[in-house]
Length: 500
Image 1 (tube, rainbow, N blue to C red):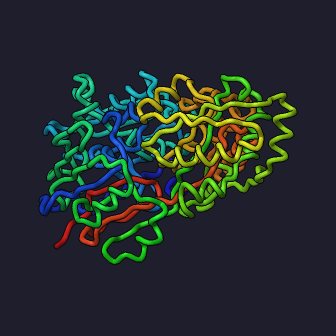
Image 2 (image 1 turned 45 degrees about the vertical axis):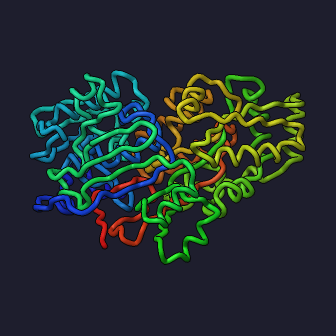
Image 3 (image 1 turned 180 degrees about the horizontal axis):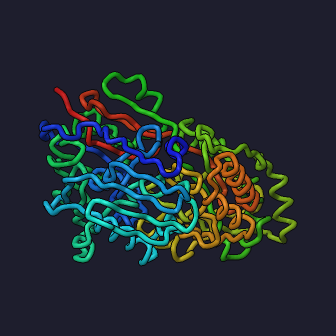
């Protein structure tokens, strides 16, 4: 929003100051080894929703614009843009001389193909294009996006994360993109060993300048203590799979560097409103009163999180105050009695690839037991978890939403009745109207009020039962230089080097 406020309608934006651009850098040094907690389900950025996938894809693909460390949008494949006076036409001037990893030239038609694919195939992120009426390429270096109404969140929508990456048509049509993606980013895929690792090699022709490391190997290390042990032994350079209970100890260890940042992520419970009795708002509210968020945050994050009853963290300018759901077992019992529910049994979907869900399920089972509610955690691998969520085969599930920037990212896809991630089946016409209006409101204060009203109603209805905003916690060796943990969770290795 700060960027949009600085650019009045019709004025161009040209921030072509990308670090390293135009230099004669060449990749050198050793390969960086990163331990991540799980294996990507696939490497097609338009189809995956796995954070493990995006950890890799952040380094392989580019978007038209991208967030800097302050989460403000900066040039990427587009080096400048301008908005028409009526705010219905966005014109992007593309960076010249960009090539795909296979050496073919990147053009405006690639952008048109990528965005049209998301829209026409109604892929998971099509909701980000709800106001887009047409995407065209007047020439090889220009992309025009027409919208039906002013769209103040267009830049974060197309650049906030690599799910909106620009992909190559040939790579998509061949089907290779799922395991052998071709991007324009700082690293290209060299090898994918299923169940073990993914190897990337530095792209010496990247528009931002060649990376300093020769490549990146992402190893799949699901056990946090193993990941930390491999850091301390020197077998791994970086990991974000850090046991929360070891954070305090690691902070005082000179042999490693521990980086932390307040994140825009949130963890939540969702009850399946397509099943009785969770279609009754009183039952969902009862669960929200019955759980002890502080205890859940402590056993899962060991203090490396901030309890929150809404999605947006207090560090964000879009944060809304809300504290309706105090830990109140008596109120929970009263709501269950009012709803005529007794002896409730809950099938809770969790996954070992996000161990927080398993730990939290055990705590929640203990907290709900005095109410006569039996919680049975059902632990599956993450690919199965995604399928079960999509099929509605659960009573309650727990997971997180990652990498949000604009308030629309926090609420529309998850809680609008037509939202592509509204797997819990929530529908409220008042919330729909608020979210629809907020999308086109250009006055920032008015927009903030609209999202605040929607957020409070979503929480009142317990569409999601929000738990906490975690910290981003990562660990690396001192020899890894120029790396920093980011609040949006983006893992960027393009500027780092390894010394010694």
